[in-house]
Figure 1: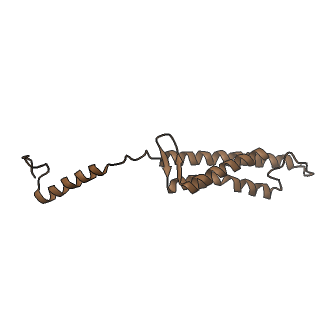
Figure 2: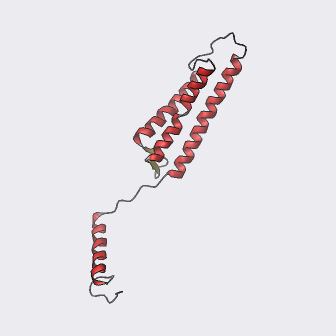
Figure 3: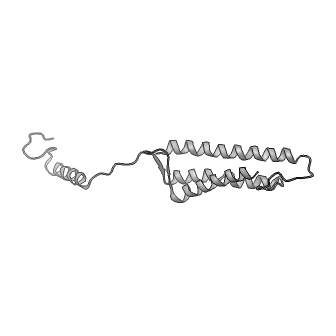
Length: 141
């Protein structure tokens, strides 16, 4: 049971990091930012509380290494909790991965201040003169 707890804890820590930083790299050129990254983190954090709740409800110790019990159904209960832990972990990883792929964006190119200044000068000139080109050109609207 300890291995399942470690798996769930690792997912919880990754989810917590994604939740606090608000940024998850998907590939080298794409990443998820903001609320989608936080939702990604929450999805990864869900399996650990569910695992602990299942262990508490079935009277199993989450860190037990093959403890003995007089309950004849103990091995079946332990197997079911293990199966539920794996299903929860893989399900949350799958859901978080699909969300990250759908919500990922390529990095934005930085626009130089010179380009913004030139574009705003051309727009102002067009508003005042009605010409879409510089002086000396014969194009006008």
